[in-house]
Length: 207
Image 1 (tube, one colour):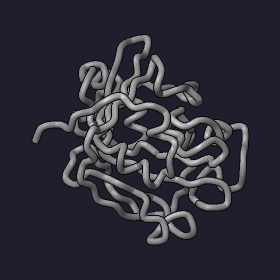
Image 2 (cartoon, one colour; image 1 turned 180 degrees about the vertical axis):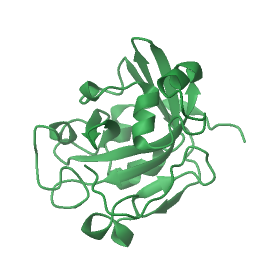
Image 3 (cartoon, one colour; image 1 turned 30 degrees about the horizontal axis):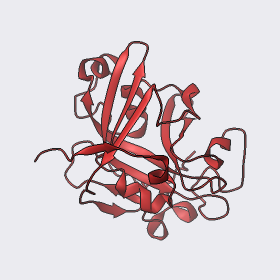
Image 4 (cartoon, rainbow, N blue to C red; image 1 turned 135 degrees about the horizontal axis):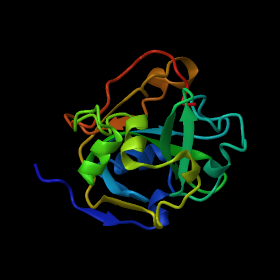
């Protein structure tokens, strides 16, 4: 099957509820031009997170902190965070200023800069280069310090699908209790896509 046509989008495309935005990002291509070269990933799995007082799984649930301040800002900016003391994960800020919502980029497939992505993750198979949120960030070469960057401006580029792709949805992965489960079926993925990460049920916060 041919890859869907991707086009540039304005900020208004991202300024919507994250649960609405998340499936529209499936098939989108995100690229980052690092000092050692450029890599692009086609997104195949994402998760939506709402903001203050609405979503216990969200970093912004209890309000603004120095780390989460970017989530309260303009849509289409990058919210990056560090987890397990070793991994960077990437989110796209959604909604309007003050809503503090976002979409976690859970998995994808490298479509440009394959050799560079391989050098960044030498032990991984091509399928696993960006299959998981930390792997995706590392394959792209996006550092934690890029949090707050505008994804509509260099060194980033994002192109979204012209026609939405078929998708499945279910509980967010790795989260249970108040922040996940059946009450929050806000994980979206392209069925059968090799970039979709393994589903995990055990309790772990979005942080």
